[in-house]
Image 1 (cartoon, rainbow, N blue to C red):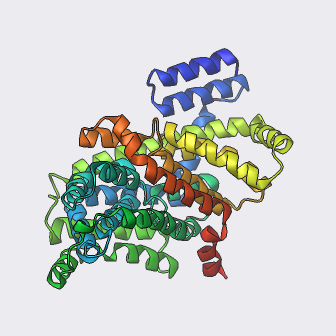
Image 2: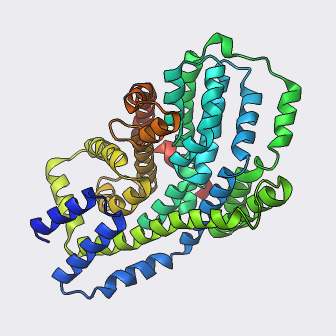
Length: 422
């Protein structure tokens, strides 16, 4: 494509055109330049839609929306506070735990900030945490669970990179715990002494009873998938049935007629946008492969970068920028096909690459100046975005330390995968 066409597409995107429209238009123009029938784009869309793991995405998305629209956030917050509130930093740990759990099931950090922010922010202020610390913690915690199963970005990366989603679920556990742990240590030392409350056995038991239906969710997934009892899609189906049963018939927080159709519509709108972008992007990827773009990139990197360490440094910087500029689903679809051949050349395991990729984008959500979580928190808490920049910086620095460990110690990501497959 000519520079004029490329410039026009960039301008089209800057004017606010949907990403799938820009990518699809670029694909159609690229196919036209090669005398390829436009129907090839729809063939790619059909190929994506027929991927066996794809059915898990709408199911887990719907389950996340069901959880978000009930009182599950309140119950999880109460449970975390009941068991951790008596420890130094325990309330902030409760925030980290509740956010990680919730983001893992919703797959979208903005939903976590909006759904939990109204509960967690007043709680932190009540426990005498500073305003800046509270804002920074909630903003940074909004994406802290993206490495834990059943995170939708993990599933989508597996589909695009043609990597086992089961392996990715295992690979994300220890790096995810590392990021939570690094932030938790900082929270402990920043915790005001007056925020510690005595452990109450009666409150802990009451919170446990109140959350008794949410607690089994991770166990259902992990035990079901890795025992071989269910496939990924079957686990997603069981999860949906479980949260529907709990939300509508046990807790009776959702009305089957009034609420469920609305939640289906909202969740499937998100899924539909992901699948359309995925199909358009895969068509454009086919064009790039025909034009040997990955090989040209590989030749450039071979010429200028010899060390795998140097490649990973450049990759981290690039992905942090991508994480600021693009949502995580679009980034996976557009960028992953281009970097997979490079990573393989430098000896980076595709599963490890997936964890590096998602950890970068997770951090990019809260990276100034344009990390999306900063603007979501600014709107949610009616604070200037400049204040959010300052509040998020200490947590950003800690997450970057965790990212370096994840990147340069691949065994952290691959240990559980090797243990499970040996």
